[in-house]
Image (cartoon, rainbow, N blue to C red; front, top):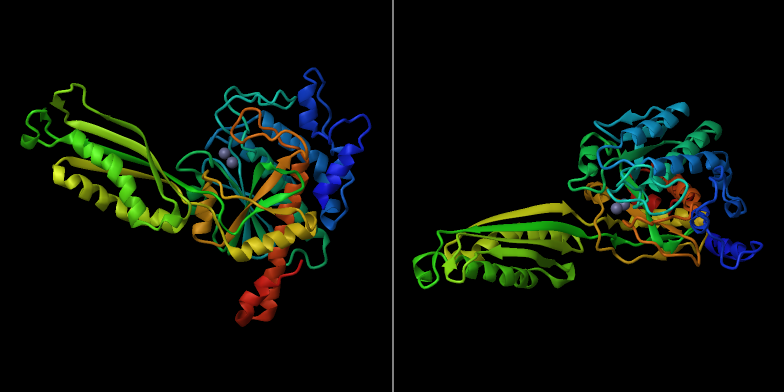
Length: 459
Ligand SMILES: [Zn+2]
Ligand SMILES: [Zn+2]
């Protein structure tokens, strides 16, 4: 509903030939335009009012400015010191008590009592050049928020401020607490998720939610799916060694190139016969090397490739069978084989109850037609580690101006329609409120009615 409203308003802007552009997109066509003061985009101010739009309004201009400042000062993985400090300072100014993580990142509980729901944002930038041409483009060479983490962290901080305001002004407060997790280093392997969790980010937490910008979805809408929403991606490195010898006498040594060839073809083929094809295991070599002379059997060889998979079961099965399979394929040829299976991230697997909860919250907040089914991405996302021990959901936040350019993540020109900031805050906040309501309903219903209370949570 909200998205259609935005599109209609766009066509009504005087002098605008195309649907309304985001402030960022508008700036792109006018390179000499002076920097405009941060303020709510006009159309967002006209959005249908909900209790959360009213709660958000006092923070809107500040959050817009905050996000632009973060965009101008991107910091790479595990170096997010300024970003962490800015978020912590703002939360402290609201009277909250953020806990800094080792190095970078922080967690902060809002409300009172134990926090059973965690909302997570990643905070790092990418090592590439900002080519947006915007007044608030990156000021740091070879660093840019080209994955939208500046939007995630600002939306999460905004949700924290809104939730805190509700807690202080509502009779009875929030009736519980919510944990904000500002996680460093999503863009590298191993990323910041594991160290963040190791430092207690999920202690006491029963479910976790995250947002990720999606430039294929219009602003004011979200993409969602139950089950895997990203993929697993590992690196496989196999080193072979032998004594080498003359190609006329392969029987007197280990024929390393032949063994390497068998591994290159038999390993992917055998995996596809050992593991259910519905897991979609894909082992593809990117680099193979061995030898120099046509008549000399080399003593060393190398295979490197990537292994991708659509679900956790398949990902775990591969890890189990791979070492033995490599030995069995290479075994008859007598070469020494060293397998280095570098685990990346598992897929993010959204759980049904939490997707249902999030979608209900979003429909209630942004409008009944604002949730669309999203395809599973072959990319990786380390929020997956949170969901290996807790149920939860990653929701895709629309950032495209309706009718506008479809940008791509991890590209220097990646640009968001800044109205995504408001929808991000409202999505995070409405999910938190609905989760709190589900907890309250469950407590009232008693332990026997756990499942029923979660499924029927109102908000
Ligand atoms: Zn990314
Ligand atoms: Zn990202």
